[in-house]
Each structure stands twice: as structure tokens, then as C-alpha cells.
Length: 331
Image (cartoon, rainbow, N blue to C red; front, side):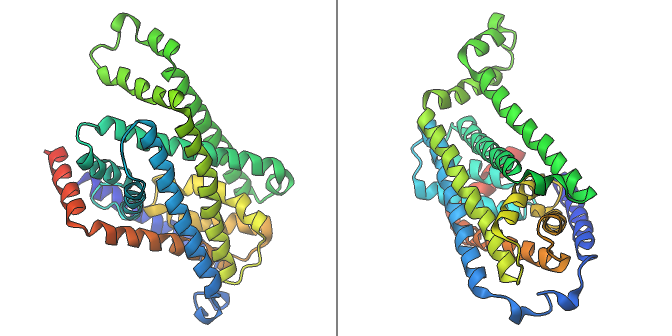
């Protein structure tokens, strides 16, 4: 019952945010009422860039799995990343994308649950670091544009500074605690002997210090992944007739992505559209109807690849793996 209640709350917030975003839209000027005005060439480019982003995401995770010496095929890592997109989009049952990746890979590598789970976490940490660095670089390069938005826009950007800055601090703290000198000091006198996992987790993370090439490759891929992902939304902007320049979209997307990625709505829908509307108006003077349509067009480009993940999930082996393992976890 709890997962359903959480989903219904997310659904309610999603509907509220969508209503807030659409309340500023003049539909007689929107691409929603003029589908013939959509430039499908830009939409196709957005779909291609979104697919590139998914493949790079899968490759990034594969690097972190290889860093743990898990013999996972690159193709399998990309396939599971697409399935992750499906479950992240509609996690009604409480089984999210990360859980699906972990459960399905556990079928191939039994007894490696903790290692796989921490490789997923390392994948997220790399995403947090790259997103924060992109945001801070963009903030420095476009300081004047980001320093004088509307009151709501300024609040959103300030929140992103604290959120992403805090995320970077958390990543640094994790790897400091995982370093051998600090780890030995924390666990001296066996003060956490009754919770052996607390000793095991830092040891697994410290593997990335030893296998730093895999970690560095994953982090490097993350920048290319974000570029492709953000660019898919620029294509969405051009597809619906928006005239915002590439710099404005790239400046806004780290803020939009970090906040819409928080688990407060269904796949960030509604939150993303409102943020896109506010920041595109502040940074490029884009009308609400164009900004909301651009956000939904970019989201559609990426959702298409989650649909492909659904087709991959139709394989009986993966469907049975999730059903059996989830039943075992619940039991």
C-alpha cells in the first residue's frame, strides 16, 4: 500500500505543477494547437541525442562495474540502463530504475548484491559531480545572465547552488571516509562490529581509488552524456519554434535537471516544465507556451528510449528475474 500512496502523492504534485505551468500558456499561440508547425527534423535530432545520452549513461555505469572487476558486457549494461529508464518513468509498484538494474544484474552475478548496488551509487555520484561542475562552470561564464533573473528564477538558482554544492561536499566526504587511514581510524576497536556492512561499504568504494582509471573514465563520459542530454532539449526548443540560443538552454538545464531529478513528481514531469518556463523566460525571453512545449518535446525525445527499454524488458528472463527477486525481497 505504501508504494501506491507515494505514487499517488507524486501524481498529485505532478498534476499541480503541470497546472501551474499551463496556467501561463496561451494555447492559441502554442505548438499544442498547431502540430503542423513542429519541425520534425529537429525532433529527430533530439531523439538521436537522447539515445546517445542513454548509451553514454550505460557506458558510464559499465566503467564503474568494471572498476569492481565485475565481468559485465557493455551491451548488457546499456540494455539494463534502458530498462532503468522504463522503471524510473513509471515506478508504480515501488520498484524504481536503480532497483531494476540491481535485481536484473544480480541474476547474472549472484552474491554480488552489495557490489552492484554500490556501483549504481558510484554511477549516481559521478552524475552529481559532473552536473555540479557543469553548473558552476556555466555560472562563472554567464554570471550576469544568471545573477539578474526574476525573484522565482533567482530562488531556483540559489537553491541549485546549495543543492549541488552540498552534493559535491557529500561525494568528497564519502571518499575521505573510504580512504584507508580514515577508514581504519573509524573502525578501530571494532566499534561497529555488529554492523559489518558499515566496514564493507567504504572498502568497496576504495576500490575506485585503486582502479582510478575506470572511475576517471566514468566521470569523463558523464560530461559527454550531459551534453547530449541537454542538447536534446535544445532540439526540442527548436522543434516547437523557440528561438533561445544554445547557451541559454545549456545554462538552464543543470538547474532544471538537478531539481526535477528529485523524487517529488512522476519522472520530474510538471516540475521540469515550470522550471523550464521560468528560466527560459529569464534567460532568453521565451514565452511560456514555447518553453512548456519545448520541455515536453525534449522529455518526449528521452521517453522514447524508455519505451525501447520496455521492449527489452519483454524478454522472459528479465521479467521473471524481477518478479522472483522482488517476491523474495518482500517475503
